[in-house]
Amino acid sequence: MPERGPIPASSSPTSPPATAPGAPAATPAAGAATPAARRTGLLVTFVLGGLSALPPLSMDMYLPALPQVTTALNSPAATIQLTLTACLAGMAVGQLVIGPMSDKWGRKRPLLVGMVMYVLATAVCAFAPTAEMLIGFRLLQGLAGSAAIVIARAVVRDLYDGVEMARFFSTLMLISGVAPIVAPLIGGQVLRFSDWRGVFLVLTAVGTLLTLVMWRGLGETLPPEKRQTGGVGAALRTMRGLVADRVFAGYMLAGGFAFAVLFAYISASPFVVQEIYGASPQTFSLLFGLNSVGLIAAGQVNGKLLVGRVSLDKVLAVGLAVITAAAVALLLMSAGVFGEVGLVPVAAALFVVMSAMGLVLPNTNALALMRTPHAAGSASALLGTSSFLVGAVASPLVGIAGEDTAVPMAVVQLVCALLAVACFAGMGRPWQRRGADVQGE
Image 1 (cartoon, rainbow, N blue to C red):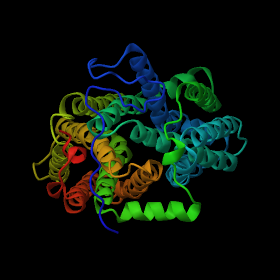
Image 2: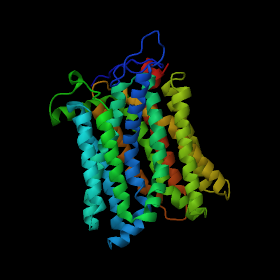
Image 3: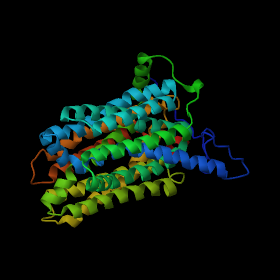
Image 4: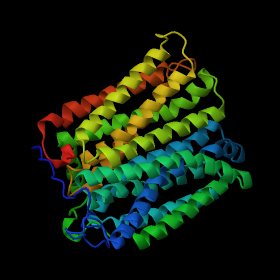
């Protein structure tokens, strides 16, 4: 397939997108959005941020209840762990289905159906009498909840282009980055006055509220004349065309491998920090929170200070370089090259890795979606599914050498970082392209 040219940016850094639902266009002389446009923009930001936060809330709010679920349903821990795996698998696979559906039927209808199904599946989880039933409806919950991930990303592509899209992704990172921090805390507080079923009732309420706000506050962002035609075959051809676009595939894989670095951290850090370095659960929680704050802060620096002033590709290259350097440092420390090191330098390296994600993840999404003005749902599905699948493959590898060393975590992170750099440099080939979509200037 011939490589498509870059898509020029259509939004100025200071004006709202002309297609924002309900937002009146700013006049050239105004130089800023009207109050009505700002209110609409805030509502859309709230809705899309809530949709982006729903998956981590669904996964992480449930974590403190796992031991209680094991006892209550009289099932082995390994079986109850499948409730997490089922939800994650549903989110990965569901995006491949719902993304193309949103390209054909518009964004709002598939999103509304997905959210209603999410609410119903979550409510059934709250009353599941057996582990097998809980696993099944967690899978359905993940499948339905994937609509929130994939369509939120596609809506951003509908409304924004160029540097404005990169800025908005950084804003979404602020909201979705807070969710993993507060979700276990909320889950723990729910368990103070309820059992594990109360966690799912709270998620049901959150899903219901978000569905109502989305239904009233988010207009259709994909007009009929821009929708895809055809059935499953057409959707598969669209996805095949996207994967064949070398630049899109380069950004997709770079983002996927960077996400795998994040997954490796999430999977291994509780063991590394608490078991190898002897930190308390409270210390681990503090470090996890600080790392999440670093990611959020870097994302805001990216969106508020760098995007529009520095090439998106340059910011992405710096982020990948920082992640790679920090992963090298982690490997050297874990392998004992510097002798015995304590928790502080290891925690510092992990903080650098996590913070640099704020420069990488929003920009890989933005740069990839700039290649797809007419199939944002399918493109969003490929971006999301590839990240989940690569991360799911990388996560089990962090414990491959047993419980006495952090070397596997550092090796997985370094290998994934190097693969991300290779995909970005070898397939994205930023030095060969010019234009507002890749330069961000």
